[in-house]
Amino acid sequence: MTTMKKAQQAANRFCDGYSCAQAVLTSYSEKYGLDVEQAMKLTTGLAGGMGRMANTCGAVTGSILVIGLDKSSGKAGDHESKEVTFNTVQDFSKAFEGKHGSLICKELLDCDISQVEGYKQAREKELFKKRCPHFVETAVAILETSLNSE
Image (cartoon, rainbow, N blue to C red; front, side, top):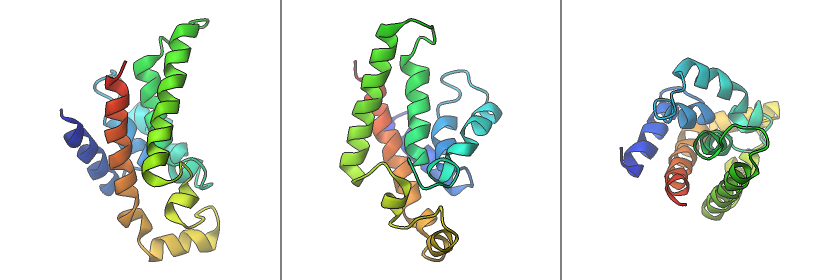
């Protein structure tokens, strides 16, 4: 699947009701042998900037999970694998922030969804429909580049 198709697939999943983090991780489930239901459960708490606290964007945290699946050996004491993973996360984060100006949900939305009024405002302004699919799509496009670089 091409980068654009993968990115569009993730954005479509978001528009179909998946959270930002769910849309990203489930787009990679098959590749890494991860059950979609498990991926959905793993990422549920990451939506809305980690439990709707408006912190790190779920498209970012979902992408970091994918980076771990791709770059980490999963073995304790494997410092080389850990460094590669950390470097990839840092490069991904810099690219996402460079594209969108922040990694933080409330800054990306220009609205603090951790507060009742902010969440209401975001829904009224349709920010989840207007902005979030783009964050998901670009996160996956950046992720594809990150995964394919050595």
